[in-house]
Image 1 (cartoon, chains in turn cyan, yellow):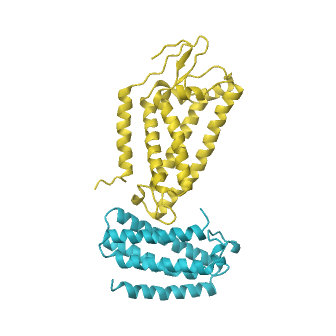
Image 2: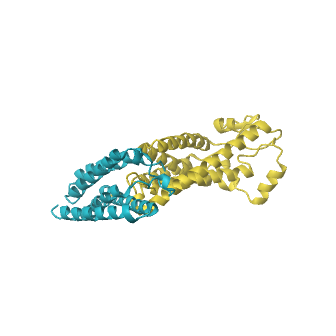
Image 3: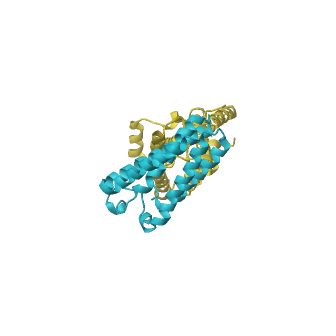
Length: 153
Length: 223
């Protein structure tokens, strides 16, 4: 718990830098590739959490996956600058609705960060029921946002 | 069994129940998959797995016309059938071409089901019962197979329906009725015997497939 906060803050700072840098220097293709890699990482972390919660519930593994999720979630908000939607010509499942309703999207991205932080705070507690409950809340934020802003694959 | 001279029993009850339940469950799996109803989708998948595993078992231990050895013929026999069949002489069970259609149907549906066991959705939240044995990337690949082979299955099923329509309309051969009742009209002077099957083999197969499916459902973790 005590170590989580500074790590997350450092990650937030890094994400800010990364996000800022992306909007200045990166091409749409690079930005899209970066956020897709991050989403994949988060998918992997979600799977790791799910596997542990359905099996051994290893505290260290839960904590590592939850931190990966929280740290990576922070980077995503900044990786949707204008011009990185389908109109960029790069293959992406990001829907134009993201930019048409940017405040709604940003709020959803913020909700993911907040819920992922809560999960990272709980993951090492050994309270499997609580971790599972929060895991489902985080999964709900993924699904809610994807329904609205991601093309069906 | 009846030795009615007018008709002959060509399909044992397990082949028929398998056939019609598979249609219903395939539809259920399709519908629940499209609607993200994943709990029910998994249940439909387990039922399909059990059915197809039983059908494979029955391909070795079932009634005469259920057996792979009876209906999977070499390319020579298939070609000969295609060249010479008059559309009127009924086959004893699957014809040499239709037999391979059955094999193709079983192969695609079994592949979809097996891929589904390891599949992981893009968010890492929903997954098949064996997905925790593989990585996220492998699970995503399984998911792509699950969907890609599903499209192939739709094509094979379409072909299957067209073939039945062809026999029905152009050859006046009713293939659907016998798949329901088990019996078809006997051709003139045809000396084919009624299909028989072993209840012991059937029970053994059900027990085997039931145990295997249950193990898959628990993810092979019995802790």
